Length: 169
Length: 86
Image 1 (cartoon, rainbow over the protein chains, first blue to last red):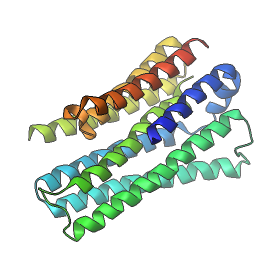
Image 2: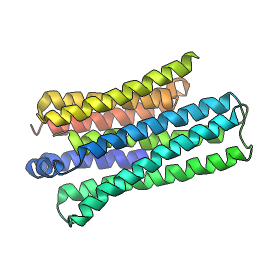
Image 3: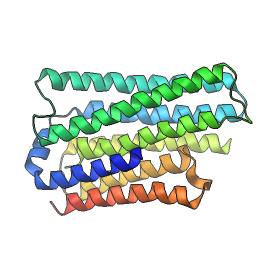
Image 4: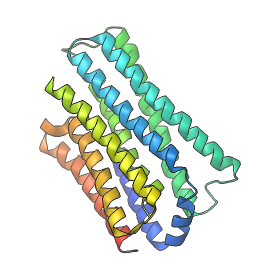
């Protein structure tokens, strides 16, 4: 469901951009590509750490699973911090949803994704708590895999969002 | 062991593709070639996530059709919208 909504959002962005090319190209240059790239590297790494957590629990190693989940959460936390820095820069410059069509899409798309990162982290945190209580093992780890899949979905959406909003022109 | 090695490699490939995308943006040329490179890099990363991180390699055809179908429609639509406006 989330993927469908993001997919429609992406296509509408591309169509709206094709009708306002100069505006989108001009204001895209005001975005911080370095932070966008750093956030992409953080989410990809975080997803990789969560894969390692799934592999660890399949090997019945709960401690390593928890360790890798914490690493995944650290990646997510880094993403949220960098995104907060980015928003802070924009908001302090007086930029908001009503500034223009480009910023309306930039803010709504990235904030919608931001909320999914927060939800994904809450799910991973719940998995960590259950794992520490001994709820998962090599024979019973569906919860870890489900939490991991949601986190990968959040990563997948950002992987399209980053070049679309920050780079392609 | 083989699976772990592949996952390491996939992580590195995705990091490198991200750096490539960033540098294409830094060159700032735009145009057909850079749009194609950026969309292709994003699509490759997305396939690696779906196939190797989400592990949809061995699941039912329906799930794979949904995920790869979503990716294809999104990337093709974005590509067409950008290319017709060049």
